[in-house]
Length: 202
Image 1 (cartoon, rainbow, N blue to C red):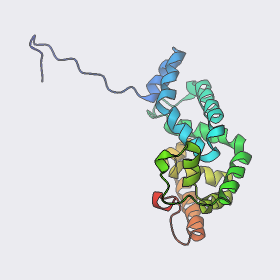
Image 2 (image 1 turned 90 degrees about the vertical axis):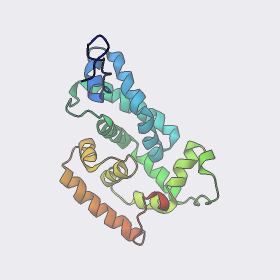
Image 3 (image 1 turned 90 degrees about the horizontal axis):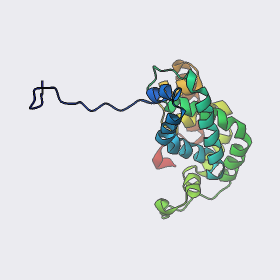
Image 4 (image 1 turned 30 degrees about the horizontal axis):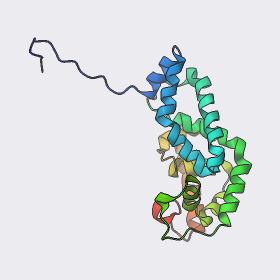
């Protein structure tokens, strides 16, 4: 065991504070909830912006974190990472904007794909989102049910695991796997066997 020159044990820096601990502490000190937004706000915003466009993303993200603040007392302390919980709340908030998402996907489905030589790093957020959701994929997404679209994009764009997606949506993991299998078969047929959500296909 390491000791200091005085013979005492050295101070051990504390480990990272989990989201669950911050949420629990925020029940006593509400200002601590701002840490949850600082940790995950940008990620949730990127996801919502890809689905609705940046113009509407701010409102949906605000709705998401306001709802999370109000529900924080019911958060499961056994889950250290709040991302799946936040994505579930964001998914619920997105349901209020189904028509806007459908209009966006229909518009992108009619769009001309971006030229390969364009520099994506120099584009605005709106153009990056539009460029990645190419017309063929936008058209395919409009043909999925709202629930299937939510699940697919939580896996493909939010990068949630099956367990995390199950937590976000509130269904068993087995249901997630069977639904994804069915969704992917539909998309594979629509894209001639290619995987439309891989980076090299978007």
